[in-house]
Length: 426
Image (cartoon, rainbow, N blue to C red; front, side):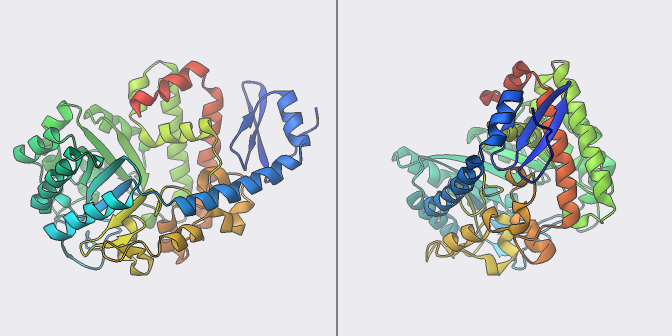
């Protein structure tokens, strides 16, 4: 067996006294001497992968299958959160979506998408400030379903401050998957998320969502800021509140250079805690960690990837005027408009080509290129004015975190992987 010297094409891992190599282009992991020797001797493999990436990339651009639509029913909010990328939910253009625009948006995408199932996500700002239009859209979609044209699922992202008995009944009756924003305990939430009078929102959100949480009908997203980066404790607090799914994501726009080392340390600490709970058999506790589960699944499936997510392809966002953007985060960046419900998606193809990681020379030299895939295009554009140019310090953070995720994956038994990734819990 040759002495393995790491390069940009693979990375060596040693776990449980066993040697593995992770292949940078394919995401595949080889763990026997025979497998490693064979794959390293087959130089044509690397050329084949390059060609495969090109074909996959071209297919993604040509297919352009939209299955999820974020409908910004309002560009405005009743809160003034410290990290809001949408300028208090207004996205440089405040207003409310009217009924005609909302229904025309649905009709446009019902006709546009070749998929049988599509998802409508009510977004804002704070979408419940325009509850009447949400009700109109849901009723319209039910009529479409009766005609057998599509199966339509609903989701909503809300701050939770406006949920009442009427809205709760509507959510349950229409099986709307709701995710609220709650950043952790009372001190953390009230520091980050407050109203125009600077009154904290923790108590209101907890009270308004009590019944939905008791029914296991509510997910949550916590935004991590330098004020509190103790991911492990935030997760445990949110789990104690009976949310069915938990997402914890950093507010990179608030992170100073010196924060990234702490951020990586805290995420690794949390991942190891989740691993420990897996080893104890606490699968339900760990399954709630949606992004952790997705990353482990990504490593397990080892698919060749050319885009970091479905931005502009599987997912688009419609603003209050009916303009279409690659995702809700881009709505404030008018240069990234890819079309409208009146004129079609004329800019979608060029956007997809521009976010293809194959176009990024720097990423081609990075060992996590098939996992990170150049990162979030919006974050890149917001940080550097370039959807391809990722913050160098953020790159180092990603490498540390992904290395730990791969090590955790290698330490899991096959039964543990199966139970964690059971599709019935996705």
